[in-house]
Amino acid sequence: MSCTTRNEVLELAKSKLDDLVQLTSDLIKIPSENPIGTQRDVVDFVKKYLSEAGIACEEVGCNPEHPCVVAKIGKEEGFSVILNGHVDVVPAGDRNQWDFDPFSGEITDKCILGRGTSDMKAGVAGILFAMKTLVEAGVELNGNIRLHIVSDEESGGEYGTQWLCANGYAENADACLVAEPTSHKTIEIGQKGKIDLILKSYGKSAHGSLAGYRGENAILKLGKVLEHVDMLREIEGKYGENQKQALINSKIIAGEKNGAGTGDVIDHVSANVGIIKGGTRPNMVPDYCEAIVDLRLPIGVTIEEVEERIKAMIAKSGVEGVEYELGCQMLGNYTEIDAPIVEAIKKYAEELWQEEVLPAYQWASSDARDYRQKGIPTIQFGPSNTVGIHSYNETVDIEDVQKAGLIYILSLCDLMGID
Image: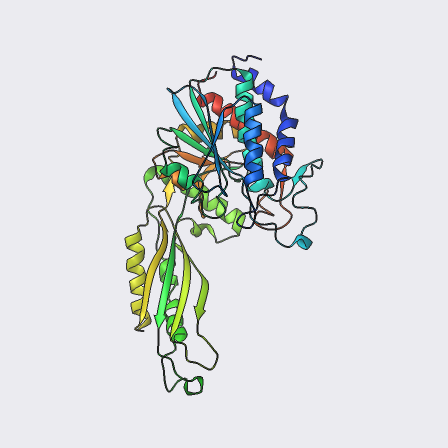
């Protein structure tokens, strides 16, 4: 059929919402656990779906175990939007902890059940549905829509979004929508950076029976340093005038989701001592100990600022023989609150849900950073039930899936000049 207006496209999409629900279910039925499984079957499914929709696509990437799928509709000139989604999911884990088969894709009267429903196969289904609907509608796009389906987000993205951005697939884009789970009340427009801090303590070995008299216990030395880890949490982010409203929104959302008093997680460094390794045997004074601290950096905090605080933390402990190194390093990143992609999603999310939708910053990190690092205004917005994500009994509400699909389509119509 041929549609010429946004309302005609919307009516076409509404008539096919059952297809969107079924597509989500079909994706869930294909196990694609990462790192223990394979994404081959789900990637092949996506390619077949696009092909049957009349959308030319290509499998690309540097690792055949973690392939990507790219596609494009529209014309070369004009506004260019990237739609990004990952088809890998975290492992289902202990099946006895599930109330249902994690790969059943069962559709109830209100929900779709299974691993990856919220994170993020419902979002993937939404952007695939949006592209197919626009092609079927036959509308003329005043620009182009580019699809990035990746299969390595849950293990860091080295073979997925990171690779696509490093190899020319994101050039000349004007906006990017990552369909990660956010809930319909939030548009993620920024997120914290990340540093893996590795602290290393060196001591002197001796027989355990002489501990306190001979040798230097590396574990105890490192413990004295870790007593001052709160010094890192005192580092605050730096926000401009145009970021104040998003920061206010973010603190409200953080408090609602994580409990009263957690709003400062947005604009302060967080530090989690996640791993400590040291010693060889109980009867030996340990001569080496190592701790890995997960640091999350708010917007405006530099690597140099964090390093200065690490040095001060070690100095304050009063011990010698403690060194550090920095592993993964990523800065906080954001998109302007008035970017066209933000305003379009906000407009239609509020219209369909009849609720205020808040652009806000996130306390974790995701593939959105890779697009923002290339200067592309990028947001995250996708259907989700937060309970069950990376845990057991993951679900997504059918209403959320359907409205997300319609919001994607209406927003793309705006950005593509379809009135």
